[in-house]
Image 1 (tube, rainbow, N blue to C red):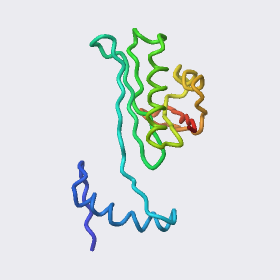
Image 2 (image 1 turned 45 degrees about the vertical axis):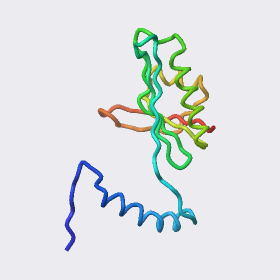
Image 3 (image 1 turned 60 degrees about the vertical axis):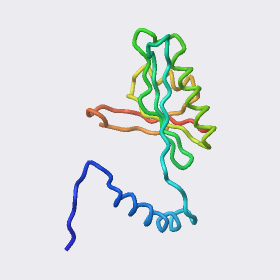
Length: 141
């Protein structure tokens, strides 16, 4: 009989299990072992000592995912978002990413912003966060 356990943490036992077993899954699916270690970066925009923007990036095996892109409401339209996105793409390329993607709300003004930066709509996330529709945008680097 098997017992199931729910936890909020990832204990070292789980990390060791994943490290040990993923090499077999990688060989089956990709034909070679790979390192699935995630790298996380945070880039902030400062005006003096005041934070006016932030974006987070998570990298894993050549794919970069943007999280929490946010510019202060009273600083929007001044190029801060573009600067943050340019820097995040620079970091992603330097780290060997071939693709970068993000999620945003369907119909939000941010969709036009990402499109201007060369991102293409690649997915629909119906009834997603708070039961609202979201979309995925991707850019190949």
